[in-house]
Image 1 (cartoon, one colour):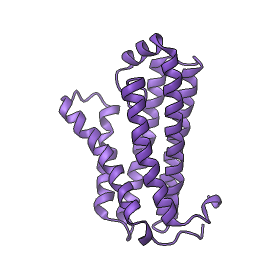
Image 2 (image 1 turned 90 degrees about the horizontal axis):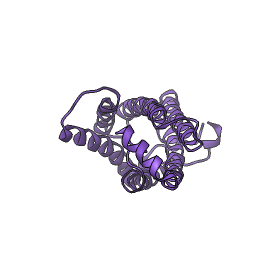
Image 3 (image 1 turned 30 degrees about the vertical axis):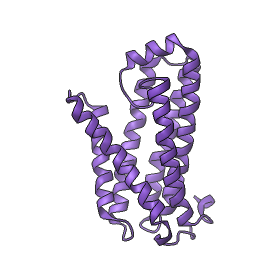
Image 4 (image 1 turned 180 degrees about the vertical axis):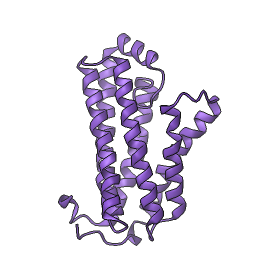
Length: 210
């Protein structure tokens, strides 16, 4: 990723934090106020009914979600810069899985908007995207854990968060409180890393040689 070579690690860390916090706000607006289950996997039938009832909402939700995915692209590239001193290979894999998630979800959104797929097919595409995202978190957590400049506790929390994505992939029939705890774990892991990077950005090792 030669286009990242002149970006300082401190600036990349700030980009991760700000982009992630902004994405939380946008995801909340899209999923809670526009189209339920459009971003976070959930009840496909509810999503299908809402799309059929109001195509205008679909357009607004799609625009918002594509902006979220643009922020995810920023996060993926910035994480490469932050993680590269720990391991260039692991940093590349971490970024690659997040960017792959962005590509898959972007295809799904465009396909749904242009009636190339229905809500059920879109849900399947979205689920595959979340598999890629969970793998991203595994590599992210492992890289953070083995680095010597970020807390190992953050790395462990990120790996645990990746495992909680099983609530989307497997029919576990969990009680609602367990599903809420799983969602909070996912949020807490990335938010904790983002806030740590913002606060400690000036302590990160230089990453200007690749």
